[in-house]
Image: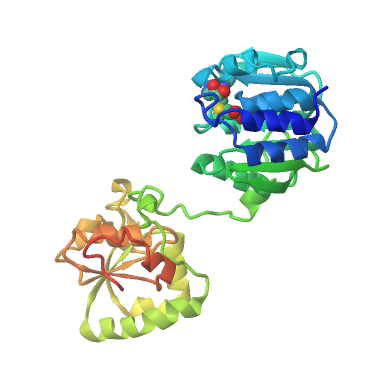
Length: 348
Ligand SMILES: C[S@@+](CC[C@H](N)C(=O)[O-])C[C@H]1O[C@@H](n2cnc3c(N)ncnc32)[C@H](O)[C@@H]1O
């Protein structure tokens, strides 16, 4: 049997592009070795193949690999003298089909998710694997820099079934706790901490033009009434005195909050609510007509943008309409520093 240090030295001697599907780097392999060697692995599973497969063939008594041969990753592993072939079962093919059809007959002590990375494939693999992972077992998720995998990571780090041991670069190492296995075939989203901590997320403007990747998606919503009041009361006084025609962009929970925190809004000459979703246009909200954002040009003097998550996107949208638009709350320094503020974007 080869000593683990010798296996790691042999892996370190392989070129970084040993196969062309993206090899795990040495610090990640060393961490995998450290965590895997700390527990007895009678059965382990990996999606994708490569240097990690060679390593795990030395650490696990029965290692099952669900992988395609992209970048010759499988071929390289199968041909390597470092592989302990007798311990590894290769299941060649798309894990979306092979892993999903697999019947596990033994609990597993390690699951490594590093096969197809597009959404929802790692999530599917997680769903298939987690019920079989023993308490104390290791769940490894690679490539947490990919946004959808990052969301899986964020979910897991708050889930009762897992404790985050560490991240090494883009690889996350979790340990299965003793928490009861969440049913993989029933519902129960309301029991999952990731949901209970965030529920409900804003949905009032879910159909608004998506602008988050440019940094325009979020202002700095707050649940402190004073933040809204200290900003809006002086503006409202001016609008009332001047008879300003005001339209509020946004119909939903944030605007409800706005009215609750700042009841003085009832003093302004409110000419419309605006919503970018055609299905809402022509309806009424809080007794006032809902119009398209363009409607405000020439018919309103001020548009007050109101949203938990898309105020800056609303503001950007109003750039195309000849009307002054303002935010219902201050924007944080971080949001102001976003380089993608649209040309002509107004500071409110
Ligand atoms: C990033 S590489 C894995 C690297 C490996 N862990 C290492 O240490 O070198 C991704 C692996 O997933 C495999 N793969 C890609 N799409 C797949 C799919 N649909 N089903 C199964 N494996 C897939 C690739 O062939 C490759 O083996």
